[in-house]
Length: 215
Length: 233
Ligand SMILES: Nc1ncnc2c1ncn2[C@@H]1O[C@H](COP(=O)(O)OP(=O)(O)OP(=O)(O)O)[C@@H](O)[C@H]1O
Ligand SMILES: [Mg+2]
Image 1 (cartoon, helix red, strand yellow):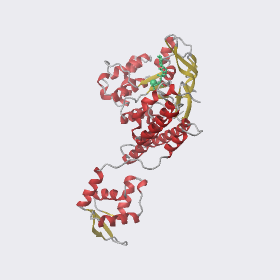
Image 2: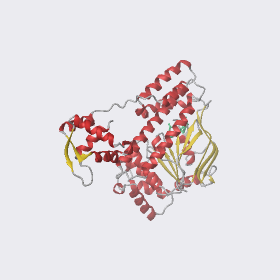
Image 3: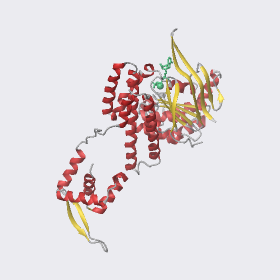
Image 4: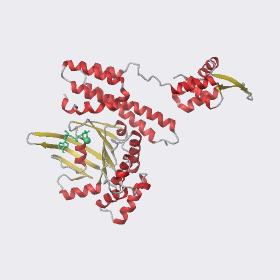
């Protein structure tokens, strides 16, 4: 997302100066949203150009340059509402290195179960750290921080669930040549829906203990 | 000292004459006082069997079980029953409350089995129900409570006797994710520093509350990961 909508949302509350906008964006959404003032003013210029924001007033400040106050227009309000209610495209498009490791590992000398296990432990450790951080916070007072930690925890969980799914399906098909290709297709399909990993779990896992002896 | 330890435990189940299931194969696991261990592993890997052996609900075919440093493997049934009633608190996925009894009665009964005197057990039961947030539901029958509330009663029931060891088998398996989190936070805040927990779970988010994760596979501990220093004791 561009800083654009964050700024529109802040201006919906009240008119602000550029300086305030930059500061509040970071204050509201956390460090990850820190912007420099160059970015703030470039964005404001574009918003004014597009008629979403107007420069409403200039406040005189003693011993400092006058500050321009920005205000949301009705068109800006409509634009903001459109952003809130249009579903985002969350499809993962980047190349996933973990996926590549597991798939390429299938035809390599390496033990895929080990690739999976080291990554699983890594994710679980991170989840434990995030969980500990969350426990130190009062959920009623630190809503933004807690929700951000939840987001990271749940994404790590999706990775763990996918690893379990992959492990079970690979173990099930281990040994039989042509099956291998089918595993690839399944793993690939699951990867597309990683967020839903939890549901894919049970079935493959059940057959796993029987399907595989550790070599 | 260790709160519970199983050493080289074997567990065989005979299904008819020829069919034998080898559920635990030389499993060794030691849990320190105050340590919180999560047990993960695929379905059928022996997690529940391990928990049952630790909690003296089942006798292993071979190997040793120690509770609080004492070998309990060869104790008579009566002695094992007493240990279970006094020193071990169980929490199950399906809550296992007596549905027709009130929350308070369910908790009081566990205190009675543990040998706590009549007057004290009622006070303690009320107090612990209050701490799990169920002061107002104490006199409601278990069957009338929601799943999350029933699991809180089960936690109260397990903790009322101040056991050395808490054993939980998928305690959040039936709950939605926010309720599950609340249950984990209750467990972590209510137990005392010297109480150990062993929790079986499939849920990585619940395992993330533990000090250590132990991975079980085909009846063996195949790996483990220290998540936090078990600084409690
Ligand atoms: N009482 C029993 N009689 C016969 N077989 C049993 C008994 N209890 C467990 N088993 C077998 O022992 C193996 C381990 O079972 P266990 O219940 O410990 O698995 P688990 O890891 O808890 O699995 P899940 O995650 O599905 O609960 C399984 O093959 C199971 O069928
Ligand atoms: Mg089980």
